[in-house]
Image 1 (tube, one colour):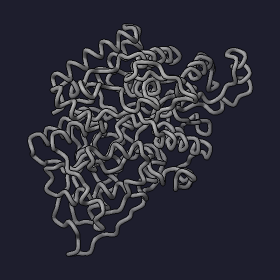
Image 2 (cartoon, one colour):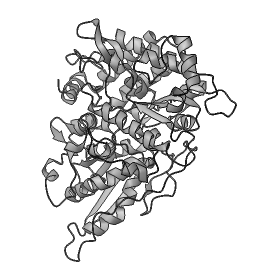
Image 3 (tube, one colour):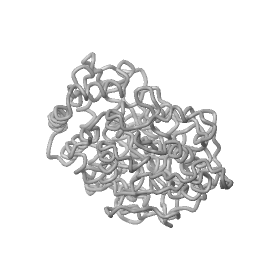
Image 4 (cartoon, helix red, strand yellow):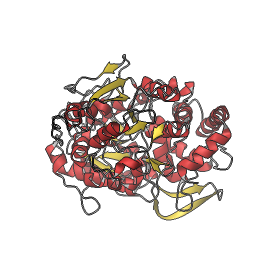
Length: 531
């Protein structure tokens, strides 16, 4: 069972808006007119209908007549698609669907308590990717392998999911998560600023090379320094080079994971980042990690000081208002930039996050130089997806619901409209030659064509990268992440040096491992990453 340290976290990260702290809601059939948000205020949602795929079942021929499916989800934008599909599911199957939506801090504890006590109140959950360590290790999830090829269920393809996010759908060789949301972080930039001859001239005079989309973290550092303190939206006030959301307990650790990957992962080291797989000794205080955190702290200087207390919605608002030249975050921001109220529609470029020219190989204990830029793809974030409880009394009806949400026709709309928190990650979301999709879903949702093409290219390259950041899926994963996050905030705020912050995180990690059991953690770690 997840430890109390996780339960006490002030927020649970999601690729969408944070849930307001209210009591349990039994969802109604219709979705609200505005996504539930306590922070995103700059833009308004677009109106993009989702196709209804299934006809009502004929009397006496309803596949799951008389059954009831109960799904638990976080009360935020990420579960609005479940509300939308309720009527269609019930009419097509004859089953009843109850949707229990909880504040983020209550969702996981409620679900794992139900599973640990083998109650079976909840048949399914829209779950975070890091939850699998606890749920699979506890024997609480049902693999959908036996349902996947069954023609009775709506068809979707695991093979459509790009390699990075596809790796999160399985655990120990079995499929557990039904595709829904595909998280990863990219670099957003103001295309208009980088293309402005005035900025190009001034930047080259100051730094000695041409202003362009940063390819390395060092180049990004120069670019954010250059733009910081300038008026970037013409309102007469000074703006910022970069925005990062660093509220304690929210998401700072994901930004650091994304940034630090290319300082540690490289051609000779694909997986050693978190722990030694033989001893579970933490590895996060190595020279690569320290150098990455030093850069992280440097970047923070070129953003608004207040962002040390901002969650991601507040940070997105800053970019959407035209007040930041760069941002590192999820797919949501690119889609929100296209919606009414955005100051950066038609100006928002996107690219894979920068890389390095050398990384610290932990096994060899030395820095390794690379011929080109060492880039590492990532799936940092929640990557919310459907899971089936082993204690469900209606597993087939439950899988029917999750597979309906995973269908191509619905997923294309979810990924394009933005306000539902569901991000792209499948071949049909992306354009040829790498993808099989078209621009039409994005254009119907009001996207600028250039913005859409940059955005899709950035995520396609990120998720297809042969080098991927090792996603942590072991019991207590969020406890480790929260411990790291709190130390990162101390470093960013100047309370600890980067090296001291990571050394303190090492002590925290060891305490968590001892509490959960070193042998158990080692087995889960090796299984989750294929050691």
